[in-house]
Image 1 (cartoon, rainbow, N blue to C red):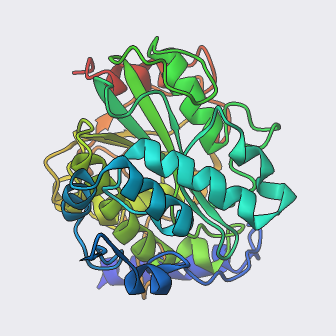
Image 2: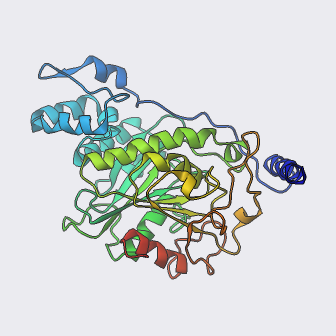
Image 3: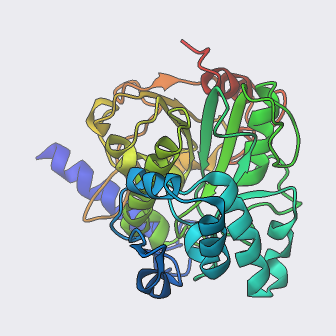
Length: 359
């Protein structure tokens, strides 16, 4: 009875915090972008060499990969020119084809906020202009890398803001660049080195993130939609022969990773600045991946109650001993977004995990 009382008190505190009366920022409710990309109806109605095209909503990435393997370059280019938004977002399609398709799709929007994504040196692996926009960008050579990492960010990230100049090490693209440099795999903006080996990193904003820290950030609705997309994305990496990835999951992104964990082939799952992963323990995530957790001493996420009650809150603290994750040193991390700052213990540890060198 006493435990139940504590739960009610903690849940009430969580609701109070989310409501903004305890100093949290408010957030606008977001509609999750789900399903196949725009242009899917026209794609389904088309054929190539008399063959039906794989359905973006139902075809497994391995089926998509097999389909494209059976096409010659002329047929691939025909599909690219006719359906750039579908090809650019089709898990299992050849990566160079997707990069080219997304350059066309970005340019076709005519929107200045996306213009930089169409630069020839950028490897945009996914681009969806619906809502606030979603994007995935590759840094390095995913198909020939020895190791692949994926950055899964939290609130306030979308296709227009994820690589803002003011966030060189704290935004998703900045985190990806910092991690790749820390692994010794290069510092180029996105293009592959062509030499293979090393570590490639993907900045993945493939789901609708919360805005601010309001009810969306305390609820699992957007995370559940994101988990489905993340699982399909990792299946797409597998279908093109990429190594099993390491997932680096920040803040609300760790909720997404927690829900997707059992449906991915990740080797490691790293939660940092996490409000919880919708699981009581690392074992309850149902994954064979090694689970890691980090939280800096000044990260405000420590003030978020680790409860899950009536759909509000995300459960146990991944950095607690009871959760059972491996701890990542983070004593010198500043704030909620400083985990990839050069020289920090956390970045050094992240690089070792990304390279498969951590134990």
